[in-house]
Image (cartoon, rainbow, N blue to C red; front, side, top):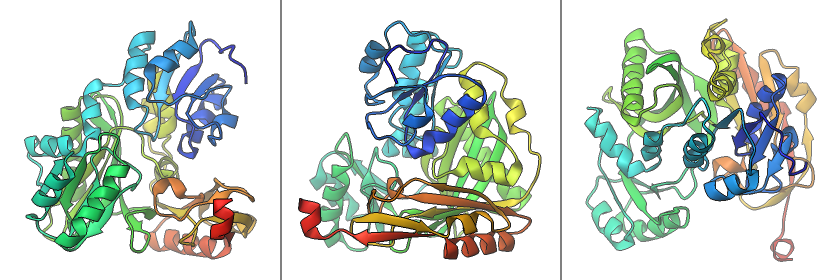
Length: 411
């Protein structure tokens, strides 16, 4: 790849494994891409026509490096880091779609709590501060258990559940490590079903809504499986209306957004977090498997200023789920081989199998979303069919990981 940038390219902010479908969609449409990511080993770089190794947060450096390039559009997928640059660069280059600056407030979990309250959505106890002593003192007065996390974090990084006040100082210190602003939020833990709702809006109304349930890795906040769920029409409509109301409050009129929520034992839905962008964890593949829609195609069309409705017209109505594969080890390891991948692909109902790691790669414990090493998606007429396909594929598809000794890690 050279620094002779292709004109009329789509600039993609981020090149992690989550962004690969954006590059694939652009290539399918024969639109050149310029990838921007600070990691020289970013997994999506090979799918791009040109690459720029700069942080997606550094708007000025990106613009300086691109020089007089005239992009056809700018887009960011499942990444919070590039959202502010998406807005600023779109203004700079005068692209057809400009990401709304107002939506950036959702990246601050404390500010988002204020928005949910203003929208009349049931809340729960929380406190936030950049002063660790203050957040510890105020958190001690909340109802335990609590969830302690960086106010501006994502991907389950720096998140701890605490059951007693004595554990607060260590949890707050851990969360601060993962916060760019060194600010920590403590929230009361809400019991209930862990759900997410995805929308793709046009003119403020959702053209595609999908509610899913999350299953977590045991003892963590890391997602292991995400499955579509059947809700009553009333429950679905209520959740969709709340999500649309939040999108309007955030200034999201066109494009994707998703929200994490808990459907409590009292029947109330409490919105936990907002992600004013496309979902990660391969959820767009779940949308395709369940409904036949292409939210990635819709996002690319939106970024280019083209009509995007056709991408969101459902062609089927099935159940679907994604299983995220991580290391079974609690220490670092080296991937030796994958077993059973070909067999897993041939299981009836399996629609996608994607590997993010290859033999020889360093494998981290699956304690945050970014440490997943693969995934597979299944679809079928019932929840039982989908679960059976995932369980069968999961029993076949196994990463063989050699633990790295302490001496090796220090060498």
